Image (cartoon, rainbow, N blue to C red; front, side, top):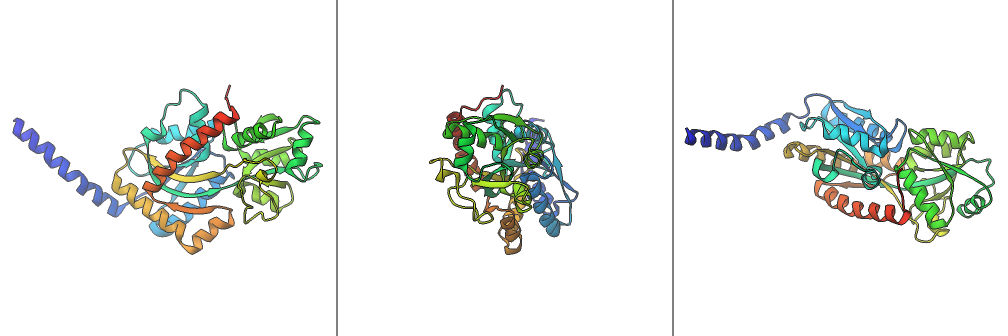
Length: 320
């Protein structure tokens, strides 16, 4: 009896890689859900939809973008972590989700424990915008105005990337503003345009339509060099030495997802990102292309965890 049980276990162990390989050869056989932690119209939403359109051309299966905003992406991560590890649920992991793990307590998921890397898409700077009617055309003028009057800044919610950007900026500039949280950055941008609040940070893809339409005025970018799509906007570090921050987009999946499926998805995303036509689409949105493999995303996650943790500490960001 014992020998027969051992034989069964051994045969199952040998069969598992074969079954996984067979599954990968026909994958995907139905639509895939890509969960994002931001509202429709946000940077992650825009990138997720562009990516889903490109992958449909290869697989002829829909990638359904499922927006679950809240708690700086933590809600989306919790949903993905509890999903079946069958390759049909992905999560768009961004810098704001890393921030959430640094500032929110008692989260039910652990990024390292619960998620496997698929691919790193690219990085993107934030841009600081104000209402065009404000008497502010530079970062220096904004800082001076904060010291004369009470200003309000918006974000996609406490602990999000835009919130951290502003807290870090105000900390380094030695000034302060009142924080007004929203459910998504498109709402914050709309209220800057409508003069309900004075300013906000947003990633370039989310802010670009309003900048181009003249509804908000860009006064600084968070990269140390000028962004190609905003060549007339100087780096904030020109005024606040040492200030730098950026967002990024990557795709991950529940940890127990078969490696063969992870490898197949990773290879297709990296291939897509590096194709001239698709890469140009991303560049038009202000994305700096990376196209990192699973191993490269693993290394990036480790370095970003430290970087974001250091910024959270320096900015003394707390969620109460």
